[in-house]
Length: 490
Image (cartoon, rainbow, N blue to C red; front, top):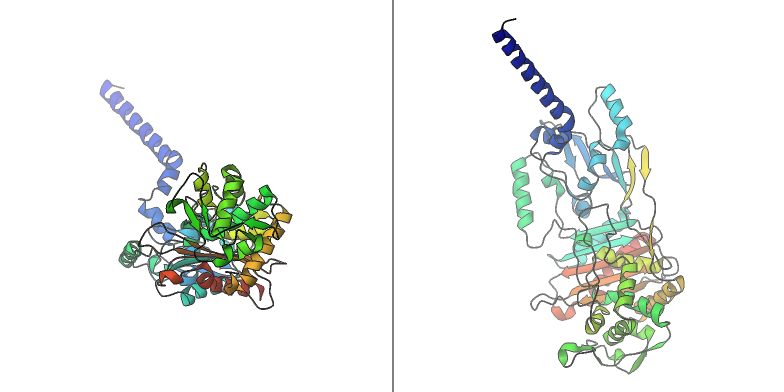
């Protein structure tokens, strides 16, 4: 072979080796990255055209894929859009949110637990079907939660509700307003989807936000349950003990009005001493600010964290905000935390966990909303196991707290949540926003029946067209919590 031919042959061999190396790299090493690349339109179109699995409440879909007559083959539908929007999220050509995102591998059929299903689909030359996700949601409770938020609050209100089964951690309801229609974001009219998303994103009321897990606000007097728990555990208090009160309490190391805690006009708190029951029923600020200072910052931090503060407690839907208790407050700041102010902030889910922990003999269960993962033909592949998060308080402390909360419904500020023939335990809260032109936040947390708890609820009203002086957790949050509790127990 002469030299020119040999040179060309070697060059062609090198090109062939380079081609094989590149093909090997693309097919094996880089394939995963290319498949996940958000700019890979072929992958996006294939995923958008797939028969995606259903999100189920019982046997009823709250998100499902149905055949369509266009190039994408299947259309994602949400039969009860407004009530379930913040749970299901949406599946669009561009992105996914909430459960559509966190459970995407199951719903798209790519989860390893669906390997057999994928193999059968491949051998039968059928399209890859996604698996189903069954939720823990009680449909009656969810409907009651959304309807109560919509109908019992003024139009344009921003609020949310969470309900938990205390003994398991199952989320029975999770609703948030304002809501939105995920069908509009799952449309095959991509320009319309873009316009709708931009409009929702620009809306000052933040309709895309799931306030139940993503809004972290000062919990106000509902946090007094945590303070009371610390007082019972650390100071050996009981529900029928007398505790120091008074019309005002000057925080340590302060002077003047800036360090003075009062009772917002609740005269039942103004004597030098009141019973612990009276203090809780009337939400006496002077009692609980003083109690927090006496318990101390370290013990208050430990008690808050035992209920779930400063921890990532919920993973079924991402992102989820972490509730906060400050790690090193000074004495006057500790006093403010005792009434749910200073840098204490909580999600509605967190305050539902506090009530649920008390209801469950002091044991806080990890909350979850995904009950089962199923194949496309409804065969169970995996069921979520219940998990103890912590023993927040002893069973005897939980019993004392329950007694205090029952009195708060029967005789005090939480009376709007009372249910005829059922013993209800509850606590109200009204938290200052700390911003001059922003009204207070209203809170309510409760559980029922008090002697055999089936449901724990937290309600948070962030904003509503209600006169500032009429904003109270009991008056506007209590009836909403009552509706959800009734839906579960009746």
